[in-house]
Image (tube, rainbow, N blue to C red; front, side, top):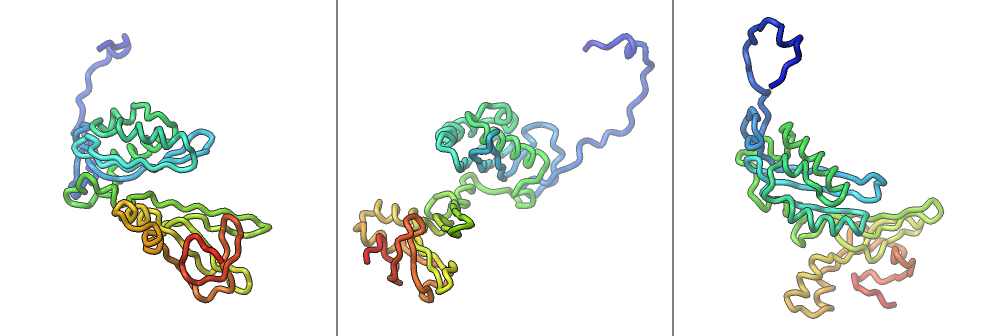
Length: 244
């Protein structure tokens, strides 16, 4: 250790009591985190790239400083999906500090890593007060039974109003309008259920019928429109594609 001449000539002054770092909540315990191995928790971080063309939601499950599980969800940028594929291989097995200083291929994912690091090392994790935390694999619960990200896609203009394109329930096939042309319900195709049924060998029509549904005052509508083509139909029954 090198010291300046000024410090070399200073007389020593004894240090007072040392209480260590303030304890943070981690998986149902209060921990004085001094080493990376002291850090545990599951939580989320959201990041974005410089032009804000796309965003990433990153979920990590950290046990004793090591990333045991990651879930990388992306939105708005086709290239980021491939970056996420690489990040899902890169992250598990790294310490939380290594991951912070790793190129995760995409700026949005790197920013998400920065944000989640701050959450975890400050004890602001989702599992801060959950005894033992959550098992590895818990992040998949965010995706639901179909193991698909919760995606919402809506489009609206002042001139022509809103178009529902996709919600958590699934791909929107039709919107229901009342006699004032107000949206009162929507019909959807749950893509997770559809593909699961097809993988089980079900007939495509049967698979589609089982994956269709609607939400809202569906039967009370004056008309139904396809939000992508504006094709108007009057069939109340959930069928896809609609042929009238």
